[in-house]
Amino acid sequence: MPPVIQIDPHTLKEAEILTLLAGYRLLPQLRREILISKTVAAKECTPSEIATARQQFYSQHQIKSEADLHAWLNHYGMTYEQLEALAIRELKIEKFKQATWGHRLESHFLTHKSEFSLITYSIIRTSSLEIAQELFFRIQAGEQTFAECAKEYSTSSEAPNGGLVGPVPLSQLHPTIAKMLTETQPGQLLPPINLGEWYFILRLEKFFQAQLDEAMRQQLLSSLFETWLTEQLQGKLAHEL
Image 1 (cartoon, rainbow, N blue to C red):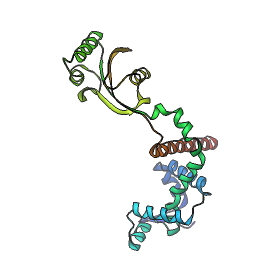
Image 2 (cartoon, rainbow, N blue to C red):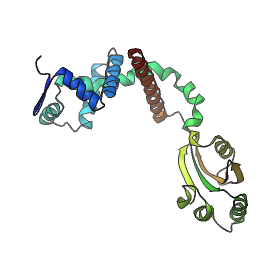
Image 3 (cartoon, rainbow, N blue to C red):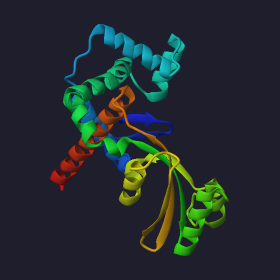
Image 4 (cartoon, helix red, strand yellow):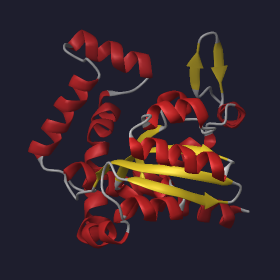
C-alpha cells in the first residue's frame, strides 16, 4: 500500500496513522470533528458571509499576505480548498445552533436562570457555635470588621481574603446558603446558621442577576451544542460496543 503521509523522517501508512491517533488519545477529538462536519455540511452560506468568514479567519491567524497564506497551508499540510472549508466551518456551526435551539433560548434561560446568576458574598466558618455567636455580635456592633474576624477565626479557604467569595454562579452554593443570600439585601449580616458540623456567618455583598443578552445567548447556544454533541458521541460509542 502506498504511503499516506510523509512526516520527516517518517513515512506513515493508514494503519500506522490510526495506531498513532489512538496512542496519542486523539481519536475522540477526531470523532467529534467528523460528527460536527457531517452535521453542518448541508448548511448554506451566502457569498457575502463566506467573504466575511474568510477575512475573520485570516485576521485571527495573522494571514496578511500570499506568503503568510502559503506558509500557513504548508505548516498544517492543507490545501487552499481545505482552508476555505475551515474558514466557514464556524459560521455553519453557528447556523446549526441557531436553527436547532435559537427558538427556545428564552424558555431555557428562564428555566435555568438561577444557574447563570452570579453572587459575591462574605463567609465565616467555624465549628463552634459560641465563637460564631460572639463574632456575629462583634461585627454587628462594629467592634471588628467582617474581614478581620474572617482572617482571625474562619476555617474556610477564603479566610486569607477576609472571607470574600465571588463572583460565583449561584448554583455552586449549598442550597440553604443560596436561599438565605438571595432573600437578603446587600450588606445585611445574617445570624449564624448550622450546616452539619459547621456554623456559618454570611453577608451578601452583591447579586448579579442574569440577563438574556447577546453574550448569554451565545453561552446558552454553546452549552446546548456541547450537550448535544456529548449525547451523540456517547450514543455512537454505545452502538459500536
